[in-house]
Amino acid sequence: MTDKSIEILQTGKLLASCEAALAERYTVHKLHEEADPKAWLSANGSRIRAHAGSGVQADLMDALPNLEIIASFGVGYDNIDTRTAKARNIRVTNTPNVLNDAVAELTIGLMIALARRIPQADQYVRQGKWLGGSMPLFTELTGKTVGILGLGRIGKEIAIRAQAMKMRVVYHGRHRQASEPHVFYDNLVDMARDSDWLVIIAPGGKGTERIVSREVLEALGPKGMLVNVARGTLIDEPAMLDLLQNGGLGGAALDVFEDEPKVPAGFLALDNVVLSPHQGSATVQTRDAMGALLVANLEAHFAGEPLISAVV
Image (cartoon, rainbow, N blue to C red; front, side, top):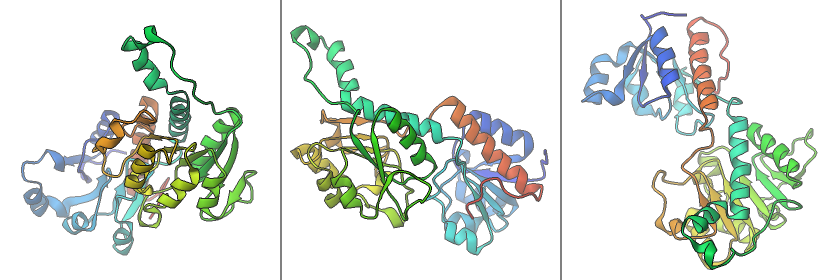
């Protein structure tokens, strides 16, 4: 459906294929390219019916009095004020499912990279250190127990791949899922204590902020490995860094950080960490699929049809 009378707003850059699809269908305004965004909103905000992207808070909704829908690019929507959106009858959609495989693949990749120190091994060869002798022995995934925090769509895909690596899977979440064969823990500290690996893939937001506390990290212990592909806010980051530095935690593979893209300098000096710049869904096919779903939600809304992936 093409209707150039419908004006939508972007407040940040989106994937090229997504931007092209939006421009083909609607009149798109890019607030992030305006010299004076506040003045532009004051003069033009009332014409905007949709927002494409994320990071929408109440102040932006105030400036868009006729906003009908926020089509978010991503599965997480903790950076959208959904409570205010609901109160104002503004629909919110996200892009679930299409990124499950990409995030699950990266998770397993980070686990192997950390267990076998693959990034460090690459540098060992490049820096000529191999000439002086072999690297130390490390560990493997086979036979280990992985505790998954958040057995949702992506968590289930991680579990399938972990089992293929001959790992035992257990999980913690808000409630036990009767159809899942894995052991459920209603206490995260207990699960961490009984696990070799802790994989974090729960939603962000105030309800999960620093749910992986120092107590949880200490329960995981000096041989325990942690992987975070969710949000940096789920972990007590200073406690994690302290434990990684003093041997209280075995290792960590981190794709997300509390104040990304700023990464605490202490992590950069550690040999028992693998760092990734929030690459969970960063494949061409996945990002294209996410953009297509964002556009499809807008098309459904303006056609008066049910939304494909509504969260509000």
